[in-house]
Length: 107
Length: 124
Image (cartoon, rainbow over all chains, first blue to last red; front, side, top):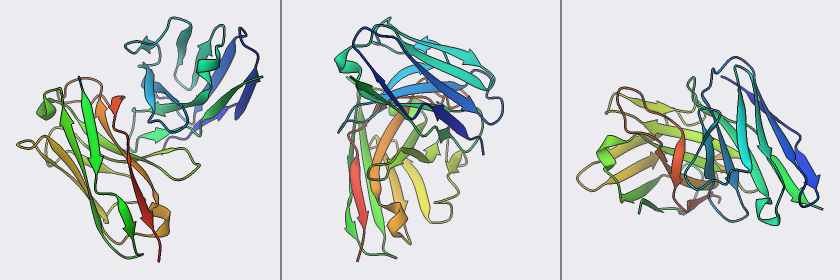
């Protein structure tokens, strides 16, 4: 099973600051890495698939990058609406796995 | 508009069974792999099961293998999850999720649409 480790567990930043979220895989997943945003009380929403392909309706201030074992989700100019838990997910191997999540808070 | 509507959750005793359903609309249901993902209270996301191109193309997490069965009724645009021998560890919100591209031998298992979820509580 491929283990995805997300860091940090919590990120507390001021509005306008840039957020950098990390997802590290226990073995290479190529570019088969996806990102989701989950706000309280809501289902997850797809942000990126195939590491860097932005999903429909996702603002350009969100960006995804990486390949192999190291991936990054960047939120430039953080807004209050970005408060959420962010998850990575790999589809390279069965079983599909999710990271433990990074909670983004606003100071 | 793509929509997924789960139903069938509820309170069940340990050892009991429950059948979840997910009614899909707004897309050609038969063309997409579909999955179940769960989230225990206050915890992260956990993939449960996926249905790809046909009956032989089903996948399960080790935690549910042998107890849960995923199926699809294309005539009703419905994905189902039969859950048997339930334990407290199965308590979670269960989400139905649609894959991001039509199935073409590969399932494209990123999830571009999610239902609102149905809560399953296993307790005596």
